[in-house]
Image 1 (tube, rainbow, N blue to C red):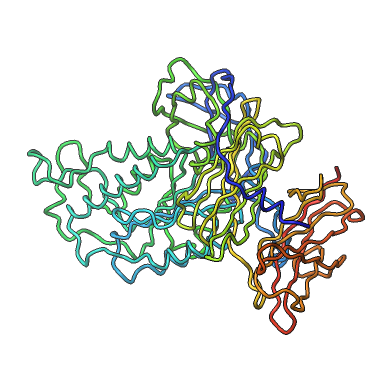
Image 2: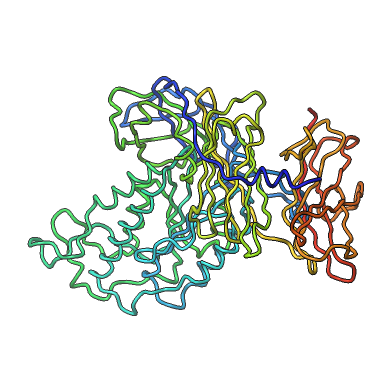
Length: 592
């Protein structure tokens, strides 16, 4: 075994191809949730049970598709904890994942009153799958704390840092200013989302919000600085439709506060005079089609039910019309089935892309947080030490999930733990002819989200994300790279994402550190689970390189007699008398 694979695969790539696309007949796409009386998704809704109106006019439902974003929670939590993880990420079917944005209006409550929010969020994080993404924001002035990420420990840490910043006493004008600033921040946040082909759930925690009001004394006179007009709520509803966001406005009731100055809450003509601190929440729920709720009844489990309800949603294709000009239009979605609740936004946004649909370029899909499932892809990643300074070579590997697909363009983005894209590479035409696609960057050590996007010769586009640890695993004085599985073809190692009828696969990794001739124990096992009994065991061959501190380790792992399924390949390496290190990778064997 040589280092030719990593030397060849870890080259940076440039360039992108663009292909022509044909625009389908004009249609609009509506997404919504259909929930039963227990709050869980209804899986068998039929088009004839659905009524969709745009601007009050009924539209024919051409097709109705159930999209499963997460499997329902297993009754046996122990079985879930010991299950074999997926060998790669994919944007196909149940594995597309969900997107959640947690927004805390931290100026609506005083310091020391954060516990209910933190407890509810942490219980919610326990329901997340490896495909889900969560972001944290504080409003009206804090901004983004964590971008969409699958690193839920980071999300929990961010929530622990959220503190109340509300004053002991808040005047009516101050409360109106806070509400207005929060609406503006929500509008900007939603505007940063492209929406794509899947919905995003927004959990807004707030103690109180004012409804529309004038900031002046008396029915006439110029408005004050805290004018709160109905249009400011409506704009949030319009942008939520564009972003395909579903809102939940959540109030921990023990945080509720009333304004201390009635003098500053007198409204002018056309405005509500109420001091009700819940009115703004009702207004926001109305314009977004959201649900207002509190933490009092369900406590820590409040968000858990919402996460489970978001496991599936429906995507309906409806007829467009000549009157569907660009911008927001009224939307109404109902079902004739008894005891089924439909949750849909009250607006649908029509854009030029809806009027003349086409797939975004991979460079655009990479930068988006949206789900693009039309072209099913699978992706994985691995890393090895790049230089003695500690930088890492991070490799993305991806391929179409279906045979016979011809890719015409592809791009890969690399996002750090803060959600910032630190690198992007675009594949050349020549690189698109070899599968899996390989793209490499040099990055500092850390956790990264790798997003791969591509288009094929039929105009379909797809994108999928995979989390990769760009770090070496310690093994006493040694350090181990990621484990890579592949085949030996044309006198070279070629990585593979899944296998079928091959009699053996090659397990490969880099070993850094130690000294030549040191007594090293190195073996590879294949098992059904990470800690289950070994089905077979092989010794690793370790070869030196031109770098005296760097070695390549490889072994042939027999899989010909194994039935199709997922298996864990475990490699254990260590110097005699020192702690051992282990790296693993899941292998998928298919019937063909």
